[in-house]
Length: 333
Ligand code: NAD
Ligand code: LMR
Image (cartoon, rainbow, N blue to C red; front, side):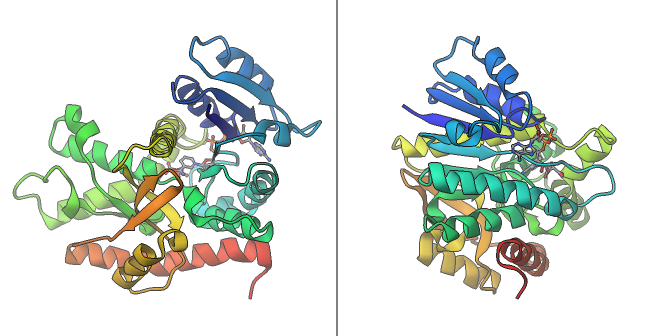
């Protein structure tokens, strides 16, 4: 029996994500929570002939606790999205409070659940969840993940476009490390499983890197005020959730980049810190998943000089974002 919960389930990401989780045969129960419309979304999904039993709750009568009861995995896409001209950090004031309150509910009701944070800015909302869990004495770094899968999905797609063969996209793997905003998104194209075309210039590499780093802006601009990526994010969120669940069921060798607290694997985390030349507590690294969540944090490995520069640029920005999350819970130092 596996219960998945979506917090923010009536939103642009929440609805298609809930649909994808509903049709995932690994999930037998699906709890949906939002401040609006969840009974309707739940009734709609409940007619789909897949195993998961669906329930939807609103805030009154302890709706959050009812939704979270018995949850094994909780995915959080609750919060406001960007409009053109905004950065993800502009969302922090509103979303940090939403995420803090939802994390408090999780810490009280299902502290052992795996928590997958989608709400932006991920580099700051993950520290918010961690600090809330610490306050409740239930923090396990192996179980809290910032979802950066969309960056990985974009990198595979864009590399497939470059080689002119979209059919190859699902099998192309490009590690994307660092964090989830602008310069903190560091695609390691030198480690792409699909080599770039011969003669691909450094300028072209820089342009492709920039496209992955600012892929979110491409969608925000195209949606022209109607929000940010929802469908591709739902796909990416469902894919990462499935990886976590497959690892819980004993599948070995599942490795995916995710923004985690580096103490989740002390030795692996230290190795990454030494590679990036910083004692940052969080980093999106290649994480090997296991039955308890993070099993191993893999080293970054060999990178090009250009990528080394990208990592260098990401570190101070990440430090600022992480501090903002910590300060939201504890006040500034
Ligand atoms: P949306 O506005 O369409 O949906 C958000 C939902 O959250 C709404 O249904 C809203 O009612 C709900 N909500 C608000 N406050 C809540 C609360 N206290 N409790 C429960 N639900 C609450 O937005 P969206 O497009 O689905 O985006 C959601 C978040 O995901 C944004 O912060 C966005 O920036 C982020 N996002 C992250 C990634 C990523 O890669 N990690 C990708 C895309 C979007
Ligand atoms: C994305 O990468 O698409 C999301 O983080 C949403 C955004 O604000 O760009």
